[in-house]
Length: 115
Length: 111
Image (cartoon, rainbow over all chains, first blue to last red; front, side):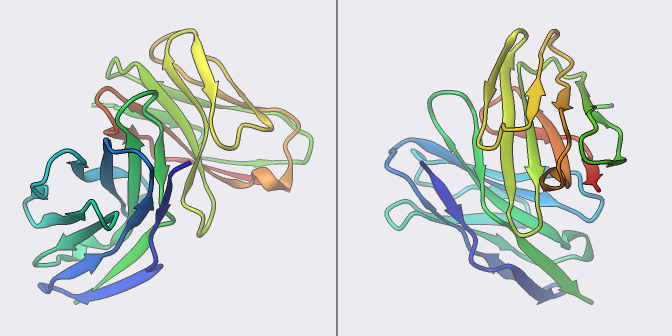
């Protein structure tokens, strides 16, 4: 079974600075998807960014980018120019490329933005 | 745009009581899911459905039941509530691989 590990329960960053959240995963599959989800204090979770394992290019969405290292099974999220609205729990998630679309989530990282 | 709607948002149950958490989505998504979120534990999949009439167990199905009679609705039934079922429950739906749309969550306390 796949596992997803987020080793940083909490992180903080000064507003306008850059922060990197770590995620590692364990799988024997070669084709899969990786995701970062954000859960603000209002609790509704939203997708931040997605990466297909077969793509070598790292995904980017505005201030959010990933560093995908397939051989190391690492998938970190970089947030540039941090804003107060970035404060949230961030979850890394894994999904197999084939089958039933089940996501496996990490335990999350709580990000605090310091004004 | 309603998206995924869950009710109720909060509920307190006594041990042994039963209840149903309702979930409705208006995006015509085939896939629907129920997760529970416990502090420090991330999200655990309870049940999921790949379409109307089809459901399957996730990681932690014991104590729960689901049905999927329509594309829109995916209720989660708790029978004989236990303190271990105290949690925040999230319903989600998806169309494309992995891009889940979540409801706002339902906080359940079993005393």
